[in-house]
Image (tube, rainbow, N blue to C red; front, side, top):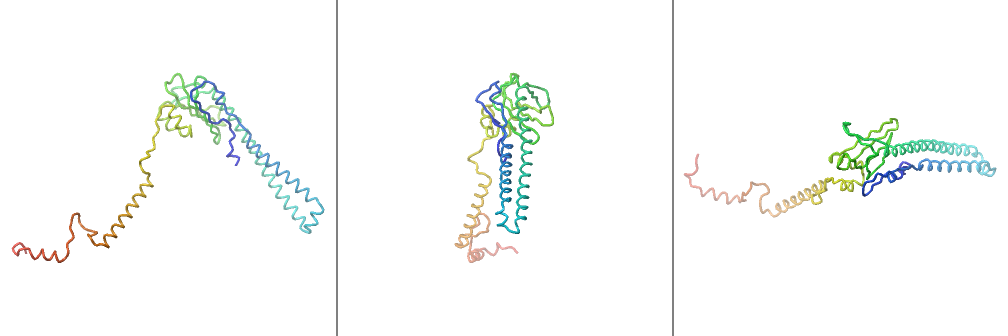
Amino acid sequence: MKNLIKSITNSSTMLNGYSYDRTEFQAHHVWTRSLLSAAISTGLTCIGVYCGYLAMDAQFATALGSQAVNFKLATGAVIASLLGYSLRDLFRSITSDVKTQLRVARANSWLVKGNASTHDYSAHIAMQQTQLSMVRYVEVEGGIKVFAIAKHQDHPNPILIDTMLFDEEYPAMASFYTHAADIRSTLNEACAEWSGSVAEQLGIALTPQQAGAPSTVLRQKIDDEAEFELDDAMFDDLENDTHPVFARANAPRRSPGEALRRVSQIPPEAITH
């Protein structure tokens, strides 16, 4: 449950225009995991102290009789196990929050003093010289990712910056995309729910969803229903016996008597042996 609680405030920010000011994009860290783990550990400690106080009461031992010692040992073991697990979880939560705080501080610092380059390292830009419109922080295993929509004086169109800051490595892996196809392929991961707004702001056309074309499941359903209707029509024809089910195209159905009558009308000289 603690992983579902956000530990980074202002993790996604988007402006209507572009700005050099970084204060609107600065992220902050809150110690939600450590506070929740500390509250659980404190509650278990209070429960353990209260159970120990009840176990020391003489009336409590008299009510249980000969099983008082076994009950005290079992209760003490359960409380000790839960308290030990909560303290271990508290240690892990504090460690994770410390890592998150260091990641956020490094990401904020890179947003001001960092650099980005293309995949072939043929062009470089400095973050100090860029105007930002959107910044999104995504904490991943082993680091933090930073996505940004920026505008630079060397590029006429807005660019998309994709940065990965690892915990064990000091240099940042920062790349920027200028081509519309590259930006479109990375847009969903970088902008999430803002993909449509960012694409409209950048002038990039996304693939529209065809509302009139039926989906594959619906088309299969329509085909199945048509097949069932065809089967019903075939059964009706068999019952009414109006035309043969299996016949060549445009071949009229004739009774056996009519066929014999037509054969009898053929002149003998036309019949070859």
